[in-house]
Every structure is written in structure tokens, then in C-alpha cells.
Image 1 (cartoon, rainbow, N blue to C red):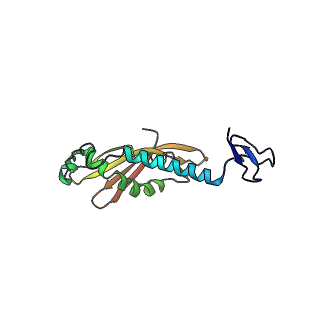
Image 2 (image 1 turned 90 degrees about the horizontal axis):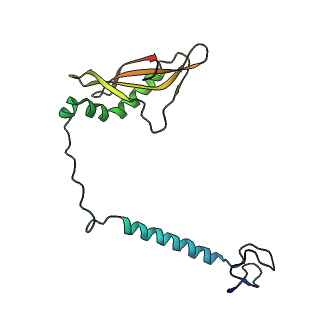
Image 3 (image 1 turned 45 degrees about the vertical axis):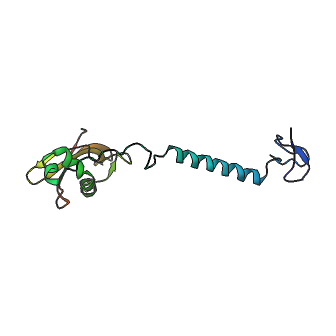
Length: 172
């Protein structure tokens, strides 16, 4: 058991003492210098761990091969590719239009990082129009109750324009 000077009263106390028997301060053997050294040690260990686990450009694993890029004309032929590619811009453009369908009030029931539209289908494949479909909204009726609705938004990705929106009671 080592003796240290109390950081408050400067009298000898055990380095393992929880309180100083002379002045009553907690952790009398721990100085600010010891705490700073401990924090610096933890930071160094964290930095060393990051350096050891990160892959270096020289000796790391080989880079993953790049996926071939799909041209817009090829993507436009595939509904999954075309719908996924324009999902975010359709969500932004259609959200306000769907909200305007509410006669009284509305509330979205999706999570923070959950998309507003869970499905899509072709409206007009030749023109590239897609209908996005979702069910993450509740519209208020005349009695004040909220009811789940399925909403559809016809979207033109070329001009980022909403062509039409519809809603009907229900869930997908």
C-alpha cells in the first residue's frame, strides 16, 4: 500500500483510500495529473486500435471489383432499377401532394429512416413514368378519428414532376 499526499490537505493517505481521513475529500490520492494521464492513455489505445484494424493501401486486402454501371436506357427497361433509382426524388416530390389529399389532418406513421413508398409499378414504361405506392399515412375523418390510407403517386423521373396522386382507405 503506497502513501500519497492528499490533493486537498496535503497529508499522507493511502493511494487506495476512497476518502481522506483528515479532510473528508473523495479520492484523495487521485490528482488531476493522474486523470489527464489516464484519459491520454485511453485515447492512445483507441488510436492504436483504429490504426491496427484499418486496411492499408499497400498490405490490405485487394479492393473489391467495381460493379459495372448500368446505362439509363438499360435501367429504364428494368422496373426495379428505374424505381429504385428515382425513389428518393419521388418521395420528396410526392410527399406534399399526398398530404394535400387530407380533408382535415394527417399524420405519417413511417419511421425516421423508413421510405414513404414501399412499392412501385410502371405507369407508362415507354415514357418511364412510375407509380409509387405506400401506406404510411393516416388521414383524419369528419369525426376526428384517424384512418390508415393507401396512397399512389404517378411520377415522371425525367422532369421530376408529380403527374397524379390518389388515396383510398386501407393497408397494403
